[in-house]
Image 1 (cartoon, rainbow, N blue to C red):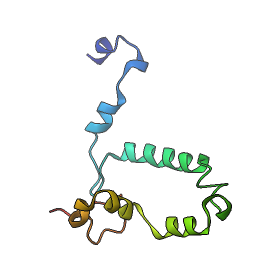
Image 2: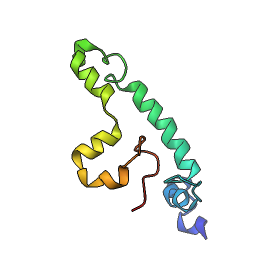
Image 3: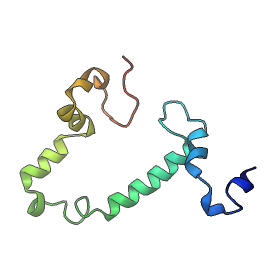
Amino acid sequence: MLRDLYEGRLDRVDTLVGNLAEPRPAGFGFSDSLFRIFILMASRRLKSDRFFTTDYRPEVYTAEGLEWVDRNSMVTVLLRHHPELAPALAGVTNAFAPWRSL
């Protein structure tokens, strides 16, 4: 019984196991619950990152630096560091969407 396994202490329950057992919606890499947590935390991280908020300006990045950031995406970053991913990423505009099956 779970109560015996975790000695009656809720703080010892491993929620990751349950989240990984939860069914994934079509096209998702993880469950709906983990997606909601990811979205909540991602927006908080972005709002608290000064390089995406108060310091996202030419005085910090330079005009050329801002243009470079705007010109690139996660797909271009992945391909720059792992060109072998090109077949799987062909035609993919969002690196967080499902890639092509090979």
